[in-house]
Length: 141
Image 1 (tube, one colour):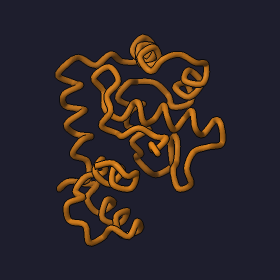
Image 2 (spheres, one colour):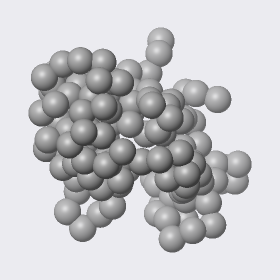
Image 3 (cartoon, one colour):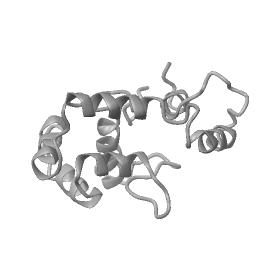
Image 4 (cartoon, one colour):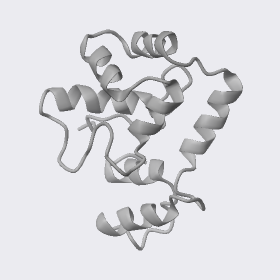
């Protein structure tokens, strides 16, 4: 069985994480978001959802409304570019590299370790980033 939320490393328009957020929005709207997953913003926390929205210059509520209005992932991303920011190639490279390595030897490392322990994976030294943690928890290699 395929997991209902795409990997954070799936790109839409050259952007990591975006496809995953759209999946979570769509599942949440149907009441089918798997237990333990959050969608949107969490007060006092910097989530991947929050970071993507700030990077693109759109509010999460507006992204949610646009996603639920329908359309392809690419159409929704283009809407973000029109109503927010359109990153250039260098900005996308910096974004993707930052997100792909999040949790590895950075300010989020402690949070990654806490989440690994909570998932019963505290002894898994090969899981060094949030992308790896997500993929491991969701049965991807």
